[in-house]
Image (cartoon, rainbow over all chains, first blue to last red; front, side, top):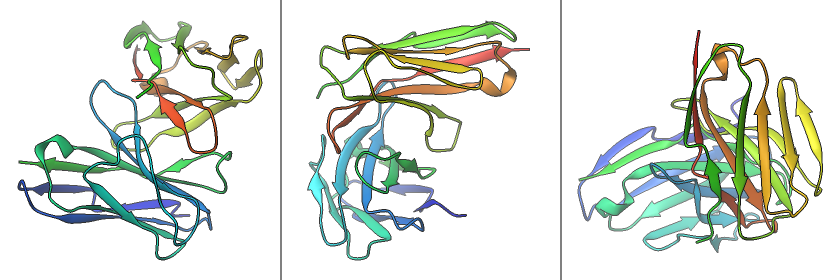
Amino acid sequence: NAGVTQTPKFRVLKTGQSMTLLCAQDMNHEYMYWYRQDPGMGLRLIHYSVGEGTTAKGEVPDGYNVSRLKKQNFLLGLESAAPSQTSVYFCASSYQGRWTQHFGDGTRLSIL
Amino acid sequence: GQQLNQSPQSMFIQEGEDVSMNCTSSSIFNTWLWYKQDPGEGPVLLIALYKAGELTSNGRLTAQFGITRKDSFLNISASIPSDVGIYFCAGRRNNNDMRFGAGTRLTVKP
């Protein structure tokens, strides 16, 4: 059982570069989420999706875009990376909003 | 944004000891959750609490949903080396508004 798979696991970018993080889940979950985790802070919600073709802003959405073209995939994009976006990014999915969120193993992103 | 106050930030204990950590907030939550995160992995749900006053156990772990709905605690009894990790509390107000504490880093000395 793969569960929630994030790619890549590590990435180093230069300021101003763009990239896309991919999250894939094989549990047929409706809801998907992107969080960032910074030292000394809890996970903070960036964007989320309640179903294929839908997205919504979370607590810290600025500088990020997302797309949910297929139910099993949720993409997080950085159009112009900034050092403040250096973080560990986690994707999660749940059957519905009130159900348990299952997390991927994270993507460690460094922006120089 | 509203974050949860989780304490302590870190704990160093001897194997076999009991552990207690808690989470407080100035806001009311409808659900409290406790997660554990091992190095290089994502958080894994340990216990979910859905009603004020609820006390729930999962093996050696026990968690309670505070009566005021503004706090929760997690106890681990008879700690073992594999309990090492970071424990996070999370409070959820509605389907998509979930806030996390900063975590308690637990070290267990054999």
